[in-house]
Image (tube, rainbow, N blue to C red; front, side, top):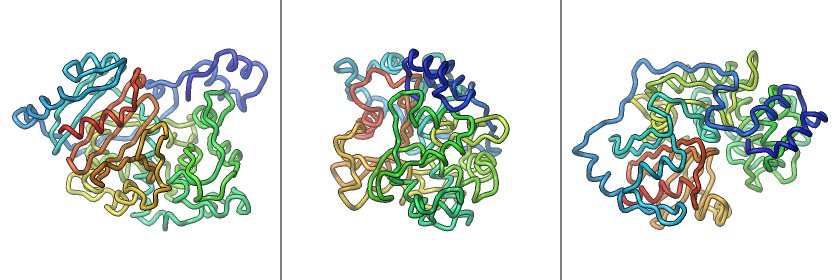
Length: 391
């Protein structure tokens, strides 16, 4: 999904290095993935809730928290303070920025041509949504256990090669497969984003290099296969599943869409292609913050929320000095980081700086979406962490 060298793309396009004509067209003409990719891919519609949930707007409550934000300093081309918040968000190509505390909207801003009604592409935030759907599928009995072997759902796979891989390994990115993401037209990341027959591509390009369960390696193959397992187990499309058991239940104000790999029988882009309004993404944060409840309705079990987002017990579950920063862990398709007082925050993070950030100890949700990440010296999750420390 990264920006590709156009000379390399042209070589691939002309000399047949790409797998299909659809793939070649998308790589060559679409090239750089962007927040408006939902307009390029075919999609399936998810209807809004008949009983929307609304966060509170109480100026008397929120004004003191807004004043606290002036103390936050960001590293953006040097020191940058939040008294220049609008300028900061504008310069970092932010499209939506929302801070919610105790169900009150502290800040809700839309910039760079976007409004409250504008659609934002999730990118890898979709992975965390897919995790929630897997949890619901287990609650409803479609999937027996995360310890099920994936070959039970995907019998096309060779049991000798992949027979020890479980759903849990997919959730934790521990399947042990090679995954290449170098911004090249023939790498795994590009193929899984642009292929029209992504099911077949994923099933036929798995290469094991580690024992399953032994090594964390971030891979879209894991989330693509989770999507395939979900549709096989539920015997419905991922969109129908989302419509029936998720999107309405979280009190969505607006419709949403799943981008799909091709028009007719395409697979939903579970690793990257959920498209919605920022305020409804915030309700996903609310669902998690309230341990799977929203609008008085149980959407997903509290056990699933806890298992998905709780820090690992063993030190090997952390990724210190990684690109994400220190004290980082990975749950069931959710990132998180521990704090000095043994508390933790967790978040869904996507390409271009898309973010749903949740701070359980202070009852805070922060959502940020943008056309690009911005020239930041750190990740948006680090900025969100700093905000939570003040509020």
